[in-house]
Image (tube, rainbow, N blue to C red; front, side):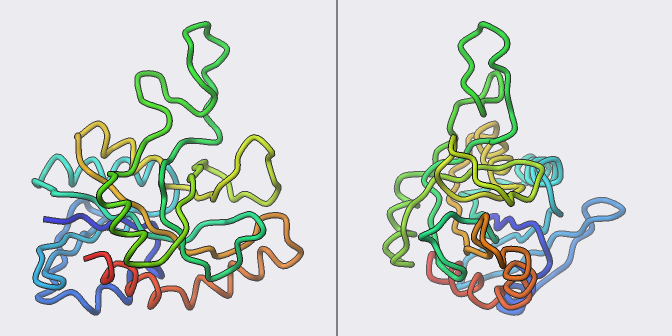
Length: 215
């Protein structure tokens, strides 16, 4: 069984239309997941909600309930020029841009959760498969509980509010993971927020096609 994880309904709606025998299953009083088959493979789709806590919580619950072969994390990310709105990227590794335990002299790196690796790595076979299927660049992903509007010279890659938390859950449950993302906005550009609002509403079909290509 393959677990597909995204944050928002807009990222999942088109993909849900492709899932055969789609069934909505209540997970909590406020959350459903969806199961069925996609390209003859059993899949579960979860829309976690925005933010690190939501992503880690609901990914972890499903990893504890089901035997998952691997995770596909999809969604929108902010990028740095020369990346452009609509570009596809494949995530090589993921870490946090808002975690700092370096005050303790225990050898932690900036962005590292104590007791966890830094960075979290995509499965190498899935990484190569996704790069070939999408003809996309591989990049580093940085996650934090803020929408990034200013460049930070410490980090070169793409930015979201969930991805590294999905990777952390995958690491805890020893589950393979790959993440494929769409650039929704270019950080520090004059039209960043307008670009994001416009692109979010039209991105679902491309995200669907990216998942189908990997499968």
